[in-house]
Each structure stands twice: as structure tokens, then as C-alpha cells.
Image (cartoon, rainbow, N blue to C red; front, top):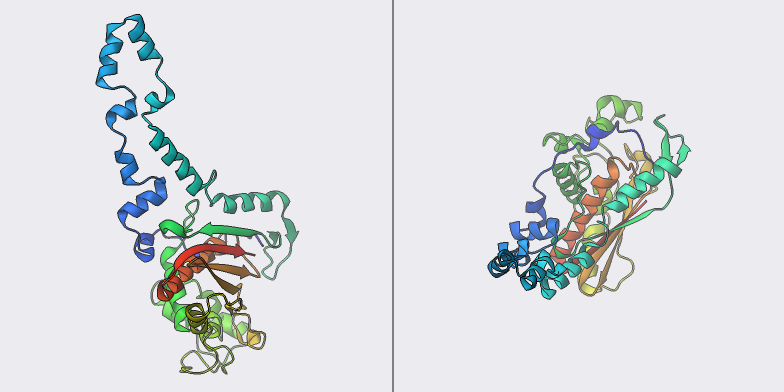
Length: 327
């Protein structure tokens, strides 16, 4: 997994936006996700309990008898913190849900590993990389949580627009650029296409990339404006149908890596394959990336496939489980 210099920042952009609206969290749910406690739990602590001294205790403390001093100075941890046994149990449950360390540390730990132990390798851009092979990260999607990293800014609007663009089966980068999402603009410019041997293509035409493969695998690609309705294999629809009719199937794989079409693509797919899995009424998804830019691409793609999982779960009537990133 390469760690390149942050020269591609413009490609993925950085804007913190309406995550809550997309994944459907209410204000209450957002509070639960961020803080790990429900409003009810917070409400259960009165000002008296937080301070750890009731009015009676204060009065006793002012009396300064031996007994009163003992009561005042000998408060249990339970009294000082204002936690009842029930509240303590709730705190423990919160730790179980959130884990000893937040899931985002997987990403931070992997960056540290790459900086210390990554293999120095060359690459086609001449930038050079520090890389490793096959690390895995798992992120829960349960209880309204969503793996949008917070230790760096992620271009959330770009994540959403690109995913919808994939789902439409579009290969026209201008559709994204017109919405202010320029992540594909460099690879669809006139200069880039001419240099890659696609001088006969209109500017913005990326060839049979992700969306085309998701919705029309096997169809003959002509250009970005052609109507491919009913042509090729609609992998995404097939997966949705399989989840509904045979959720135990082990062939729910969607691939953008079409060996025949790769020479026609402006850029071969980096996140090239994902697999869906159903268990206990939950839908999970595992993503495989052949090449993954840790600084920019990985956070972007984690959010993208987590969102795709939420969307597929919604239309198939399932809850969401986990999202796995394998690079």
C-alpha cells in the first residue's frame, strides 16, 4: 500500500460536510456516536451527583464532627463521581461498544508502520512510495456509526457525488466537474487523453472505468455519451437481487478489473473489487485495492464503500454490519 507525498490533495479535496444527512443520523444519534453515551445516560447524572455531594453531605461536612468528617472525607469513588452501579455498568458497556481504542487508530497505526517499516519503492509517477502489502482495517457500521475519518479532512461531498456517478454507470468526468468535484479532471483533460493515446476521445471521456464495469460489464464501449441500457452484465443489480433471494451466496462480488477493457481506460481501477456478505440480518462489505494512497485515497474509499454498503442494505431491507478495507 503506497504512501505518496500529498500532491494529490486537489484530486480528493477536503471538505467536512453533511455526513449526518446522508447516513440518516438524528442529532440524538450523532451525539451517541461521538460521545458514546445517550442523552438519557447524561441526564441521569444530576448536578449533585456530578459534584458527588448531596445537600445533606454538605451540611454534615460543615458540622465537623468525627463522624461527619469521616463521611465528608471518606466518600467512595462512587459518591465522588456520582456514578451508581447502573451508571458504571453503562460506562463499561460504552467502552465495549467503542473499544479500548477508537477504530480510526487502525489508520493512524498503519501510517506509523509505513513511515517506520515501509518498503521504499519506485512508481510510474516518479514520486516514490513507502509501501506494504495486504494490511486490513475493519470499521463498524452498526448503531448509526460511519467511518468518516476525523484526523484528516475528507471531501465528503466528493465521496457522495462520485459514488452516485459510479452507480449511474457514467464515465463522463465532466458531470462531476460541473458539480465542483474535480477528482477525475486531471485524467480526462485534453492533454492527458492525447498523451495516453486517446486523441479521438472527447475531453472528459475516461473510457470503460468503474461505473461502466459495475453496470455494463462485457458490453462494447464506444464513448461516454452512448446509451448502454440492457447491454452487458449489471453487476450491482445482480448483487442486490442475490442478496434478496440467496443471501448465503458466496459469489456476491463486484469487480471493476476487466482485463479486456483495461487498455481502454484512462486509468486502471485502484479499488478494483468488493464482496458483500450477509449474516444475522446484517450486510457487510470487503473492499480490495490493488493500489492505495494512504494520505488521500484510502480515507476517501473507506467512506465510499461504507456508504455503498449502507445504500445496498437499505434497498435489501438489511441492517449494516462492518466495512473492511484490504489493500
